[in-house]
Image 1: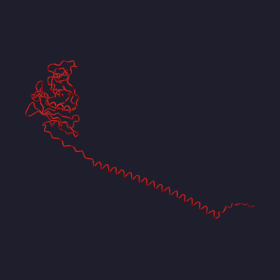
Image 2: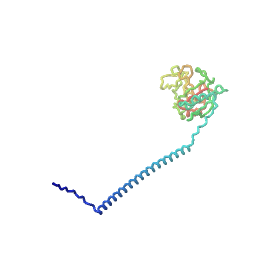
Image 3: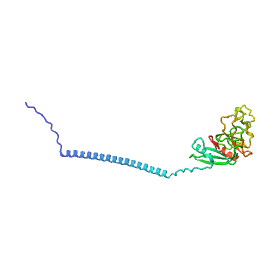
Image 4: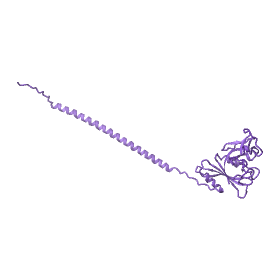
Length: 282
């Protein structure tokens, strides 16, 4: 027995329907193309801007570098001054010794005269930032009546050698001392007794009565109007010598062992020397 199978018949598009579909597809393709072109143009523009930015930044950096190089070349070079030469005899040994010592910025040199046993010349020198010495002052000075090489108390000699300076003080008010300055009072002595030998003491605070071998500082006018203590005999060995100072001129062309200069020059020394300064006597 035969079975009837029905095959569906697809609708046939007429020519007008086909043309409409093709038209729509064409429009879609055009829109896709337009979007694609727009995206490509935007990307290309971005790359161009990015490339321009990099190029421009590089150019600015190059220009800035050129300016810096030009300025560096244009800066004047600091000229190191020529070192001064001094006629100070054996004092050059001390200049060399302390040239690169950061703790010493000033030197006081005391050069004994070749023709006068108690005559001398004092030189005040200071270092600049290049560790070069330059002269601040040169002036006449007096030393011990019997010259140099002190060994005992009362020999009227000035000690030879290299010493520190301390205890800026004076009977007159502070003239502008760089180092701490003490005004001498009636109770101050350099003691000559064994207990406090070669020490500055103030009997208003120290229970001690200084003997006749001591120096009552306020009595020494004009010598102690301004003075700096020379640290000779720092161990305070009894009888070796005491009260060695750099001070003002007195009435005689010699001292009992100290170093003396004119008062105006002593003020200049106080206004120049700082802690760590040395006095070298030769």
